[in-house]
Amino acid sequence: MQLISLRNVSKVYPNGVAALRGVELEISKGEFTFLVGPSGAGKSTLLRLLFREEVPTSGVVLVNGHDVGRMRRRQIPFLRRQIGVVFQDFRLLPQRTVVENIAFALRVTEVHPREIKRRVSQVLELVGLTDRALAVPPQLSGGEQQRVALARAMVGHPLVLLADEPTGNLDPANANGMMRTLLEINRLGTTVIMATHAAQLVDRARQRVVAMEDGQIRRDALAASYSEEVVR
Amino acid sequence: MRLRTWAFCLTEANQNLLRNPVLAIASITTTAVSLLVLGVFLLLSANVNQITNTIENQVAVRAFFSQSTTSAQEAAALAAVRGSPKVRSAKIVTRAQALSQLKHEFGDQGSVLNSLGSANPLEDSLSVTARTPSDVASVAKQLSRVTGVVRVSYQSQVVSRLFSLIDGIRAVGLGLGILLLLGALLVINNAIRLGIIARRREIAIMRLVGATESLVHWPFILEGLILGLIGSVVAAGASWWGYAALYSSASRSLPFVPLVTPIPFARDIALLLVILGVLLGTVGFRLSVRRLARV
Ligand SMILES: Nc1ncnc2c1ncn2[C@@H]1O[C@H](COP(=O)(O)OP(=O)(O)O)[C@@H](O)[C@H]1O
Ligand SMILES: [Mg+2]
Image (cartoon, rainbow over all chains, first blue to last red; front, top):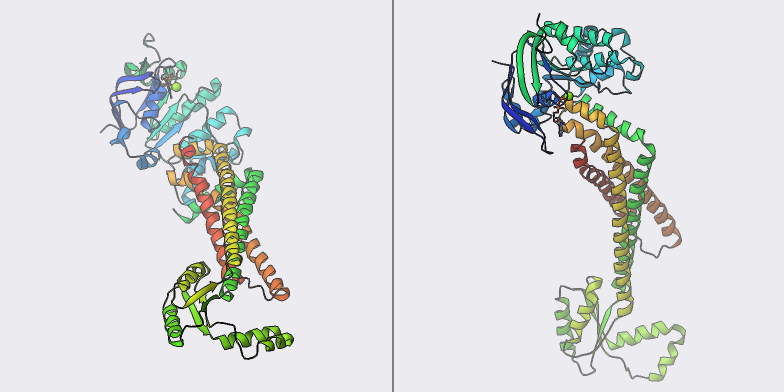
């Protein structure tokens, strides 16, 4: 069974913009997928459908067998506990320490404090921030902040990690570091979907590339590069 | 929810309150003042009511019989009047009793009545007290229809004046109290709204990582409850102890004024104020739910 499938999915926003048009996409467990395409292509909209931030106008969105678009309101939190999300703008709580920011995700889902402690130190190590555990976000560099956000997304052991332009606000060195960590997370077994227009990162990673334009999928290729012309 | 999750919600609620202490104090103050005004008026109206009742019980309706009425007719009238549900007590005052009472009231000057000799110009009468003050007028009317009765009298002005005083106090107190309560509601609602806006980033993250909506809501419900509860406890405490102090000093200096006792009256009013305060906090939150959904 596919972990994620989109069947003839369209999304029209209330203002009339058709952000997705007849999208068909299957992603299996353990895959790493780049979602590429120009700004406005519909990448963020596609990701938002997966964690039920938006509902499709038509078509079916399945995540781990659940019809996300028709899911009951009270089930949404339980879907989201299985999905980690990282954004371009980090979305951290500025007054809370790194540890508190990460633990927050588990505290609000009622995980036992001992388990929280264990898992937080685990993900801190994964993203290499153990020595910054007690800093607050304003004291951290952009690269470090994004790693805190990544740790928060991963601390609940999600089935899938969604990253929407995670390197968009990072300098090249930090972007490379973030990319390495995402690939490492995938190697450890988590399915990763990353929307980006960082061509260099995509080209170097040699992973599946789904290229979008005007709300449609134009290309879907394994071990591919950012644009079609680049042939190795 | 688990205990530690309640603790989490409580901490969040407290942080909201501490983040904007001026607004928290304003909420508590308006709640306390509005409930205190309500409490004062409730106590005032309870007391005026009690005083009226006492006076009313002392105001008897007198129905005078014509000189020609026989004692059998009078006894029948007494039995009929006693059967009425609006009548508390009734007795016959004979003209001899009336005269001796009159003499007694004249005291030292009682001798002026001696000039009457053996003649007694007074009439037999029925002295009736009504069960409740509002029954007085209808009892009087009833008596005027009794055979042999020629004249009915009672102190109607005193009673009706006290009645309109009670009504006035109730209306003013209720109106003012409700107005102030609405003001308090507005302030509490505002405090919660500002808390929602201040915490919108946190709320968005909570939803993103899979917090349930009840967990998103509870800190704000608790915030409303805390504000309403503190405000109402202040008002309840002030009205209860204030009244108890007033009562003990008044019962020493004005023992003949029949004030209501602090227990149960002031205590029950204090309890009512606390319930209203909690309600105020809850409604203050309910009014913000839509705002919370849009964060
Ligand atoms: N909430 C929204 N309301 C209305 N239009 C939107 C909204 N979000 C995105 N859009 C529009 O949908 C289209 C696709 O946007 P988006 O999914 O953000 O693309 P991308 O992430 O590939 O840049 C764009 O034209 C954008 O303006
Ligand atoms: Mg986007």
